[in-house]
Image (cartoon, rainbow, N blue to C red):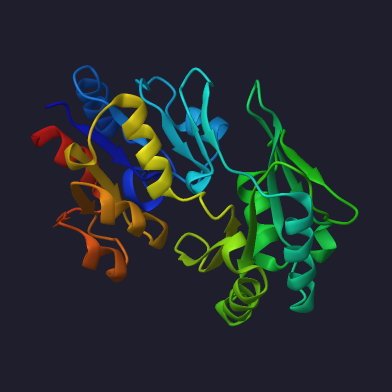
Length: 276
């Protein structure tokens, strides 16, 4: 029976330098010749394509926490977006906590071009400001808005900041929107803060994984997934084999069928693939 392997990127397959190591690249390209390999990430299509330059991508990708499933040729298989009025409700709740979000939306369905809408710099907290300067200063998607507002085809709304602010905000949004929203709150190891991500209620890695399996006609039983963070847990619960890297959160390790002895910085995923 054909096997499918799907890995998360940050803190799982990517090195902490946010690059794919030469060893991981070599193993991936060798394995991809014979077995479907794919990605399940919070990252966008463009960023994933950038990371995987020179690597084989021949299987649908799970992007933006599961909001989008797309082939490497940019054929949309599944997309789940938030409506403008829902996004505006979220923004208004955030302002009660004196915090503004980033908004990632699909600008063009054909090219998969995204817009990355940001509040004015003066309204950002130190974590947001650092992230933009460090990782997105040259990103063509970035647009600073005089006032951040909801747009249609929003893929996700993202807050970053202190847990003491984002946890009560997440509870408030859950109470307000109930089944109309998927709420993900998790620590961010690179930045030393928390991320609060708001998505369509069916925009998660588990639903997206099912779509990939259907598309490839490969059973979940014959699927192996790799991860480290809270947004991987639902995917872990439905895959035949779930594997946590050694640096994964304890909550993730509890759901894993295998815990690797190596971290993302030790090529844990590639070492496993090389032996399978």
